[in-house]
Each structure stands twice: as structure tokens, then as C-alpha cells.
Image (tube, rainbow, N blue to C red):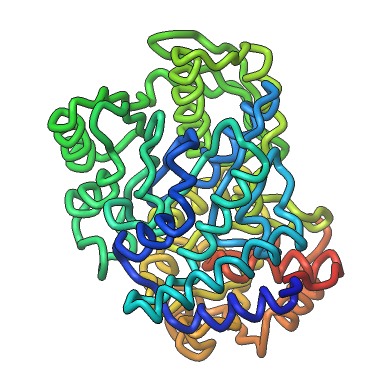
Length: 433
């Protein structure tokens, strides 16, 4: 297969839907010689903040000179951004090469009576093949959904991490924080330490109990150990006091108070890796954190007017977005571009954020799970009368730019799936698979 054919193959298996369980992934990897068993992983689960912790941790390790792989989802611009080594996307040639092999294996699995691997499972197997090819010294691996039955949970990591837990995917993971924490906590392995972000008491109790049962050390970042010094739309400066080290005046480019929690989780991961023999200097940590960028997380992609894209797609993320907007743009006239998936708690997202806007432009994305523009418009009008429906994202971006003055703010959010397209429309870049 060439790259275009490989992408067509992936699109064809996307229609198979998702599968929640480990059996198919285990069989697929068995047929690949269980190559993942020879790799070293950091495994990260949670509701909001996984990608940021991946980015912080991987960037520092790359700064240290380690060949570092990352696996994240969803992709904002190109499928290839899911799978990176030292910050570089997997090449189109390697994508096609490894997918050709995986297609043959998947078809043989089906003939042998196994379920055809899903889009996510094939993507993950592709990542493992690429990490083996590039001889990665460590891989920072993000779960797709949940933890216990997520396809990534076939690995035994050096250390596990769980970021902020909140209500999301409740139809699969449960409708209480305790139930969701139990699913996320499924990544905790026997005698493998867990590091987690600050959690609600009920979620923390569940994680702590799982760690006790599995003889795994439990470390939770404490907010009182984080001190914010400065914050602007260009970055934040903060200090963090771990039990093992004090880091004064760290700088990060990612915005929002929640990013301090994420950076602290990454710091704890890195400090633990040092105890295993990884050579990570304080200077590497400072430089690696300062140079970390992560697309679609309160990201400033344009100025005059400021244009922010944010992946807020559940109530907890919407609350963080609202807090960031109030902190960085308290008096600024705001224009929102919104599209939301129908299976998300869009009512709560709108209740939290819609009142902040002077104008809301609603639309829908090319996603079978997307909430219709009409439904989104009707719901948004409950919380803000100034709602304008748009035919598509292109019209919404164009309308926002026409309505905005130089000192205004445009913010696009509600779904990660549309952020890459919004960026492309703003920068006039061509589409990429």
C-alpha cells in the first residue's frame, strides 16, 4: 500500500466502531511477536490533561537525549501526529509500510475466527512497530478510553500516571467519580508506582485502595505545593515543591491553572525515572518544560484579534476553559465558535461557558456523532440570546473574523475533532490526512 491507500484502509476499519477489551489487541500483538514487551513505558490515563502530561514528560526526556516515543489521540491535523518519536510525526512511508503488514495480519485474524482489530487497535500496533523500528528508549503512552479495558493496557510500564478524573464517557465508564476512577485505575500494575494529579476525595480514595491492593506506591500532587508567580497569555511561571526536590520559577507556555497540575505530574514522573537510572538534569527539566507546546489546549493561534482554540468537550474541561477566559480575558469582548458531539454533556458545557460570550456561532463538524447545528443553537440560546447558526466551520470562522475587532477574542471549542480544521482555515494551510 502507498500512504493514500493506507489512509483509505484506516477509514474503512473506522466504520467497524470501537471495542472495549484487551483480547483482540493481545492476539494482534502475539502475532507481532509481542514486541511491546521489550519496551519501556510511562502509561497515562485520566479524563483531562493526558496529552499535556505526555507532552511535558516526552519533551524533557527528548531534551535529555533519550529516543522518546509518544502515542496520543485524537489527532488534530494529521493521523500521523498520534505517533511521534522525538517530536517528529511518523513518516508517510513508514505508516504505509507498517499498515500493509497489519492489514494482512488483521485479515488472517478474521479468517481464524477473531474479531478484526479496530481503528484504535491497528493505530496502536502501528505505533509499537514504529517504536521498535526507531529503537525507542522509552515511550509515553496515553490511554484511549478508560484504562482497565483500554487496548493500551497490555503494557507493563515503569510508572503509571492518572490525571484529573471527571465525569465523561459515563455510558461505558460509570456515572460516578468512584466508578470512573476504578476504570482508570485499571492501569495500575502490581509493584508499579502511581502518580496522580489532585483528585476529588472519592476518586483519590479508590486509586489509593487499588495501589494498596497491588503493592504500588501512591503519590498524589498537592495543590499547596504549587505556587503560581506570573501568568499571561504568553505563559506561566510557577514553583513546585516535591518531597524529592524543590523547583523554583519554572516556566511553561501552556495556559490555565490546570496546566500547573499537569506539569507537576510530569515532574513527579521524571523524578521517579531518575531513581531508575535515567539521567535527567535540572537544566533539562527547566528547558524541556519551557519548550513544551501542546495543540488545542487553550492555544493562542492568532492575534489582533486573539484567536484561541481549546479542546474543552466535557464539563470539567469547560470549567477550566471558563476559568482561563476569566483570568486572561476578563473584560474582553468574546466571540465563540462552537460544535459539540451529541454524546457529550453539552447542556452543562453551555451552561458553564455560553454566558461569557458576546456572540456565539454554532455549527456542526463532519463527524457522525456531532450534535446538529439546530439542536446546539436551541440549547445555547437557553444561556445566551446572541447565537448565530452557521452552515459549516468555514462560515463560522469567516463570520467570527468579520464580527471581531482588533482587541476582541475569538475562541473555538466544544470538540477536539474540529480544532485542526479551525487552525487550517485560519492559517490557510492545505488539508493533510
